[in-house]
Image (tube, rainbow, N blue to C red; front, side):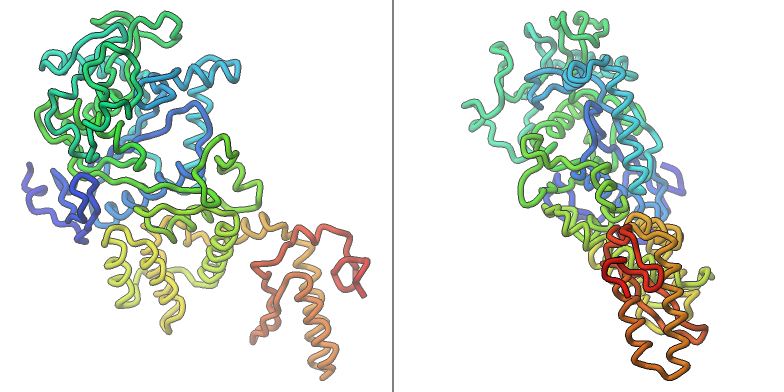
Length: 502
């Protein structure tokens, strides 16, 4: 440890819930200011859905908070492009080969297509791209090396399936997930071969699968890695034997992350991960997401319904990462309007000067550093907009907070323009409303107030509001108006449907 590492204290005292201890703990990395994060990535055999996006949004907020506090973050994310069976317990088919057969492509083509789609998806949601993207197929040597270490340390045995990890030799195996191993003896986990000594034992290297397309030579015969070994091998390859933070969904706790801990700590004799950061489930319309229910919505579905990808991010920020959340299109609609109003308010602000308004940053930091309380932290933004103070300082304060939120508030004018386009607003709609506003202004000057009121109502029916300013009338679109309906033929005089117009 260098002197800089000994003396470093982040600008914030960050407290995080650690799945390992089931407590909120003060964050203290192994070698501050350096922080290593390993994030469980996608198995690239299908499209990322909104549940995945929520998990990666939560991890991104954590990463942004650490950087905000002055830490130097290195994030590693795996891409599972081989070895992940349709069951976490090594049963079923390899998901990549299943997808390849479904789409009439090779496993490598499937992996490349869905990997590209995944990283395009997270980019549109303003999720920071990890410094290291590690594909399982490009790290076969590291995985074989880790299996060999486990074999040398006496933690493996062989069956007809391949090299198996003996969980009975790791006395703390059940601790992390609070597993009831005796209860599992009755078959809670899938029995994948009758040669395994314990139901929870898992495959490290799989052999004797002649029909499997993706295979490599190894000391135990030609085969391919089990799913769990890749994460340990690649995390230690890029971050060392001890990792500061490991992120993922809570569904990984009982099997995948439990197995990662076992194989890693038995190989090194050291604690593998210091802080485990897990996101809770996202349900859809009150039900679990599943193919059978046809509710695995993707970002393509979100855009097709006229929503900004950042509206999804804003929706997730208004929840707590450790609580299950229910996704509905009505909730996304509300989030879209709320974010658009925020963009609208920020679009009116001048360029920031760097001088923040006292008190608000402290409130924001107090909320966000308390186990990522994004809901309370977002509420501080509303306070900034409502307070009296220099507009330049308002901008500086809000944009400082947005370093963690990632809502692109500094580019609100562009984002707001994109929002109106998604809502069906066209330039001719605003031109018609502005023409009506000019006529209304003339009626007001002529004290023809009944005509001015009639024209104002017409403007409202077109989806706009008139704001009277010292510089003249200003046209503002209504956030809850369906401009797509305005695509019908309109009356050239009043701008509404020609069948009902004046």
